[in-house]
Image (cartoon, rainbow, N blue to C red):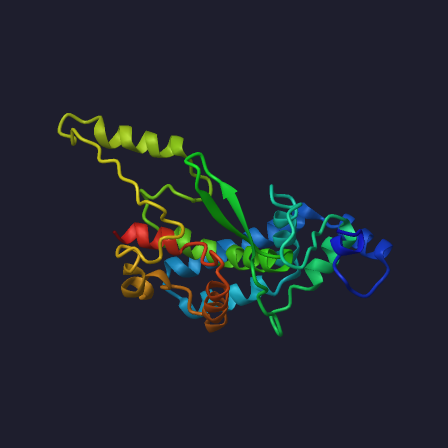
Length: 248
């Protein structure tokens, strides 16, 4: 991989692009995104779905939303892992140009880069790696969808939830089991290969439960994008698994 491969092609001098990224007021950006998310959550509680859709559209097209999405993607553990295009956004200039590339019009998801990770049982687990732009686009939509999901989600669901951990689940189990008349048994179960077992009969419930899983996500552009991501093999729906689990 060459140095050129790590950058995002775009107009403008790299030094100026780097300065634009470095001068970002992150506390202001995060506050703006948080305010929009709070408004989305409030509209969800009130059942004002037209308002939810309008606010989601506003957030996914905002400068602050795009900046925060790129920041999260380029600061997580996979920041140095490229997709099929071989690019990573490692420099401030690349991140700025990457933010500018998050345009909804004309966006097409790129294929995943498929790698296989060895497991302790000798088998290999397939892993699909999206390119940086696709990751950032998903992170951007997640900012707009998460307030809806967190408002509608089961209060006793703890998997893959923000601000929730295993310790919180254990605490809730203690609260539920500590009373004298509480249940005496805890059932532990595991769905084998849940991430990739699409052929499993249980996973077939997805088709029956699709209206529930998409409840509140009324923007047709997102549903179109979801279909495109899933067609590429992405685990594109951040909340689909949680929605299925909540209803079972």
